[in-house]
Image (cartoon, rainbow, N blue to C red; front, top):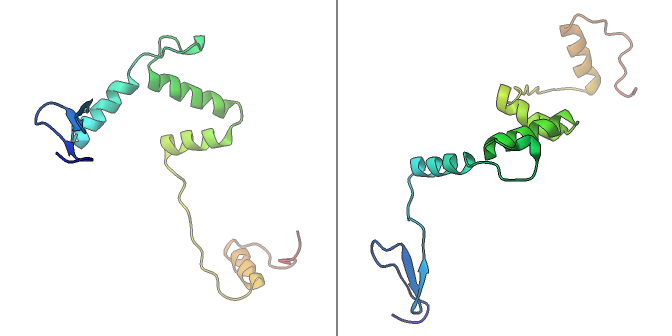
Length: 123
């Protein structure tokens, strides 16, 4: 074995690098095995110092924290929670031709609103 070569002895979950044995995790996990490991990790008990989260799992504590942030006015946290619960809002793409004034007049007509008084330069 030359310098810089890495050897992986079969069935030992170790690597041998320049004569030094290094532990390795299992190789080539399937997607189902990865999902199971994530589920196992997030179901561990919360061990932090926040009394409100004692007795929760890690995922429950994380969701609780996100909900608290949203309730305290964190709009990013609120958006993420709502997107998970309700799905992201549908976006409508409008292709406009002509001037801005013509576009606004078209919208007003489609909504049966009077066209008079539309000035796209007014704030």
